[in-house]
Length: 539
Image (cartoon, rainbow, N blue to C red; front, side, top):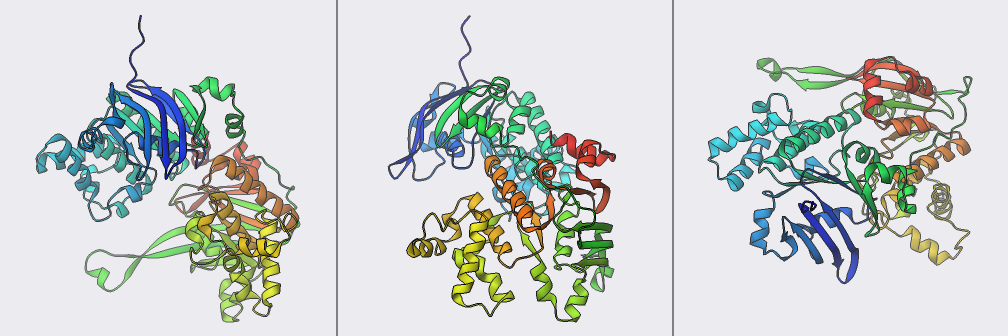
């Protein structure tokens, strides 16, 4: 009995830019109804390879063959390819906020595809858009069809993007990191949704990801890419349990490991809150909205205690209030109740004109280092900026010494390896875009460390990083805490990072702390159903 012909068969695919090859002759196949995961870190070539199949990579030289139902996509004319894109092959992009047009409603964007690809009338297309949104599980699909992207939650935006991809009943769905920007429970919902829709429509799924937990849960087979080479492929169970290539083993072993000093119950308290609340003003409907604002309570009465040298992990979904809590701790949001940092409240500090001094005590490391670092400033300017505010009396030489010391502490700069002053000048003159994602996060940590704070607020410090880089950054933060006695307020939805770093944990749901206690105890025996659901979704 002959084996069925693959839906997609890729042979010796090569992609080059300006003569420099970045994808080196990879080959794989995908049958109808099958799920193949293309795995690797950023820069491995997985996204470029997938987009090259539809010739969506600009200024690239593409060779090899990519046969979809026997037709070589790489030899089709642009006009023929337009018939394939969206009809036979659809794409779900990583970030739905950038994939959706901000000036059109989501319903109009889906209806446009139905009109172009299916020849439906405007009225039929509008009705079809609502049906597709309903199929993805969006509540009140008729109302949501009239919403713009910014009016939807992250999960709803991703569902809208999936509805757009399914509008023309494609045979093959390319999903590029479809759950990276989502919380654990939303990630589970999206995976269940994709699995159900894939079975109902009989689609093949090419999943592009660096999340191995996602691969284990979704894929039938996996192909591992490293620096443009396909180094290993096979059934998921076989590859995950018995990896043959060193790079595959590295990816599998990249789970952060717990390496923290035991908590000391008598250590000084650095951040303390009692009955802390945060309210936002919201518009009121009707005539009342002309005269006054309503209030939305983003953080309900909350108590917390963070001691010197310890980490307090705050976990929850988007909208749970965890980032709002962090902003209050940083003195960036007005709040009710009591909140003291190093024994002083922000209100007291402002009245005594000591706010600048208190800001030196608590610093922040943001989620996305690329957007939090100014592209116009050099490394020396970025890291040294805080010293201009907090220690303006330092000379240029002293400031540079402190900058180099901070960069050395985070492992970005090794002056002993190259004491040459010209080499140091060249490094300090570089800009953020010249560094990798992991290096940029180290740069962001150095910027916070340079003023010698006692507390770091870590807002999703590893979520934008690849798995191996995540492990490196977690290891760096653990080392800095041991060496400097730093305290961390860790805001995250990544249970693995909390498990590796936190001494105690707060679990937040809709602005309320539903469970709190020792980290290992809470994660081992969660009492609240919401905590149990978060942990189940993280498996």
